[in-house]
Image (cartoon, rainbow, N blue to C red):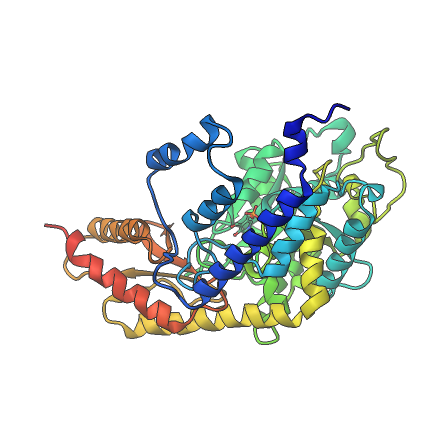
Length: 482
Ligand SMILES: Cc1ncc(COP(=O)(O)O)c(C=O)c1O
């Protein structure tokens, strides 16, 4: 091989060492400043898309014009700051430093986790981390699974397994003539709808169960909807429970769903992408009671468990079921016949699969599940304190009592229409976004627009939350209808 000077420079160990040291210093300083709640770091240094394109284009138009260290430091400075206590937006954890270092090592090694021989430690750690999580879900040693690239993919994989196991025809080889369907609450994450559509089931294939005033599935409607589908010739194969829902963080009654599934021989999948992590909280684990009755559970490490995204466990109560999703051989990689925990590509969508297990395993190896207990408990406690602050405040309204770390609320102005109320809150959220000190999001609940916070950072406190309410109130006069 000809080693050109450019290749030599790109792989140069000493340049890497020097930049790496400087970068770690930058990251550590940033973390310390975030923890001090430093005013000079906004939670979200927002700039408009066109300005951002302009700002970054020179660095790519002329290679080498900006140093790599500068690019990394500026990226850190100008992106959303999850470690900041005023970050309260989407459902993503601020990773603890060791998990980010694990991410660096896994990117560096680039071991593909499809087959064991392409990365012995990573494959083994993934297996052990999944086994540990499955104990906390209340499963026996027969449970098994893997880590995959996000809740969306995990839910889709679980539902494909359900289809293989519950459909009356061999769908993998023969397709199916009979219409199939699953049931899920109307408050569930959109990826469940997407999974049904990907499987070609169309609108009929996703039966939306209404929710109560706490956005939990009305499980007493299951029988009626099931009967209607059966009468129309549709085979319902699964019910998906949300633990918890995305918009409000509401937990379905998993025990009631499990009972219904047992009565009708249906697959019971729990979308625990966000809230299955409560199983680690000594204080709040009862909120996921019934999860141990599921056939499969998806749980994101990156939403509540301080892990970089995207790292999702998909666990099957009977580990053997996880081999039934894809009935395929890949001559250059594996033969399908034997269930082998260590060759993940037999069971996952991914062929070249990232070394995701290391990021979960490293936390378990250093802190055990105790750290997850502390983190989950802290953010759920904080969301309850925030809900109380909102209820005590005459100008704000709480959408629903929070069950997880998601709180929806809004500013209430007397004497304006519903439409104007929605517009007011929409503009308030836009002002918060453009101001940058805090980062929060918004959601529609029925016809009403609400401000939405996910208290993702276990180091946030009620001081920041009080600051957020003050900040919102400060923007109100500018946005009141004329
Ligand atoms: C309940 C629920 N399920 C699934 C997902 C999708 O997970 P991911 O973003 O990891 O694909 C989300 C994301 O917000 C979610 O809240």
